[in-house]
Image (tube, rainbow, N blue to C red; front, top):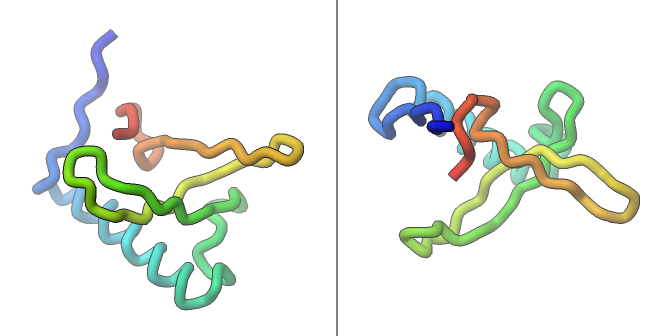
Length: 85
């Protein structure tokens, strides 16, 4: 099955999503997680990682669920049908 296309990095949709993500990270950090730590009542954590191609440090807000003592991280590409990178 073919993957649905991801919006090109220059598209308005991509820019809006990226702006929201960047704002969420800033608000989360500035407020110590009091704001930005939930999306529609789902908990959010900030995942620090290295870019696969560039090796640059990145921070991505991701949803998670608890499974006992474990955390299950949800990668969703912003809820689109496309697979996350």
